[in-house]
Picture 1 (spheres, rainbow, N blue to C red):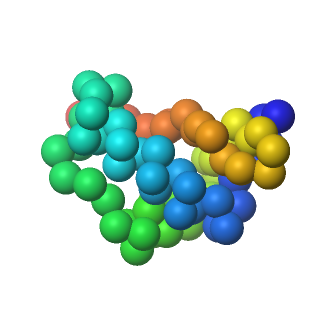
Picture 2: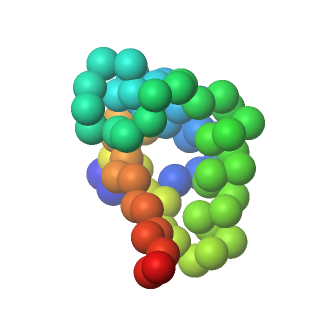
Picture 3: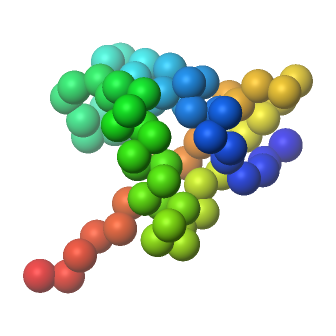
Amino acid sequence: MIRPALSSDLPQLLEILNAAILNSTAVYEYETWSLEKMSVWYESRISEGFPVIVFEEENKALGMPLLVHLEKE
């Protein structure tokens, strides 16, 4: 099921993100994130009106898309 992410999902989402950082080229990050950084990212997306969604199965968040806002220069 796809649903809005909750702050309680952040530890699971952090685990997914950090695995992608360490083991793939899907995310253009070189350093793993802390829970604090993930929380700041989540709160900024919500406050800026961006959706933060997750794919959930058996009450566990298993995936999420990352939406990035690009500025025009």
